[in-house]
Length: 113
Image 1 (tube, helix red, strand yellow):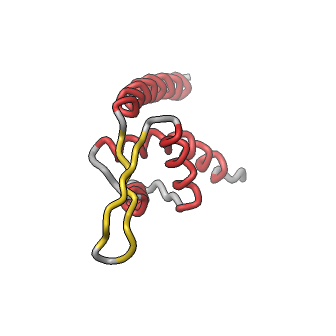
Image 2 (image 1 turned 90 degrees about the vertical axis):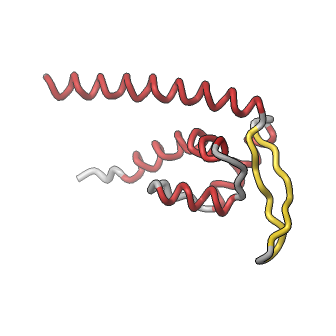
């Protein structure tokens, strides 16, 4: 039997950027909140994966951040979508829906064969 875990992991990585931007479109969040929201949807992400992605998104102008004091520890870095990030997210969402539609049609054709 072929282990499909690697394929599943690669598919999750491919949509992680879309998911993170979608979470931030609902409001500013710090990394722990982002990880928790992803876990709620069964997308398990570790900090070692999330932080480099957040840094890349910030460096490309899609995100900004601010520091906010915390009552339960050190200050937290809250990430926020920029206007460019909001536009990019809309483009990603459109591409995602087109891809899902194409994949579903392909699967349906295979099931009807």
